[in-house]
Length: 326
Image 1: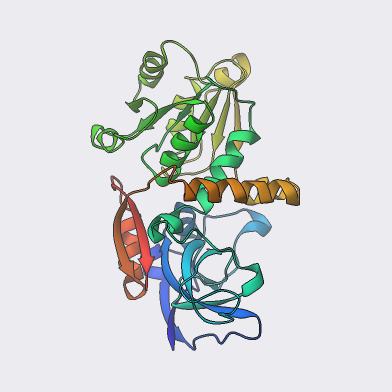
Image 2: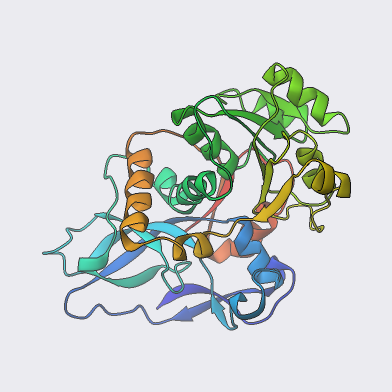
């Protein structure tokens, strides 16, 4: 038997997450048994437990086996195709918050063996999202400025690193001086959010206004980012950490031409060809292999303690990611 995290109802994540004990899946011909190594708790996972992820047909149906991304290692099955211990990406796997899962050996995405497994677990969804987001909204060239909030998040750290490699410049916005101190490795300037955010951003850029604002917070924070942009700039919202609807002043939209657009990886991927999607995967794996970014881990929790892991992940002011491990 093995443990598997399941959601049967919506509500407070740590109250509705259940740990079932189910038989270990048995690999068939050409399949490999994968043992979980680690899986990060992403904001989208919390929203799914709360019933606030998706709209219409995109809302995940219940019951739902939990898990969005992670990394595992080959533990059995077709080991003539994939040797024991081979690290494998867990993306699009039904119920990866479990001790084991089964994958077709030929279709498994193998990962660099010499990269830290925790970094591999956190380096699948976010790098792909950043690569797509930076192309979806407004043309960006070398030297162009981007401003992003929640810059100390895993997504924010990865965006800062990828933008730097592309020649873009980033103003990293955080909520507190403590969070700013945690971004010592940031390539771009770090400023603390507040009513005078525009002045702080312009001071950091030498007066240049960003072309793109990347918003993970929503609420009034969306509008504060918008006021920093050049005319015709775009706010790309991909999260609602505040729990509030995005708020953008009408004069920004009417007189300044600022646009608020949403980013969602499944929609962005669906708009691309097979070749383009393959290129995104290739770029993301190259970033992992070269150590282009390093996301701190604040704590790990076993599957038995998934409720506490979810509770910890929902806290503000964390210094790193929360991971679910066996």
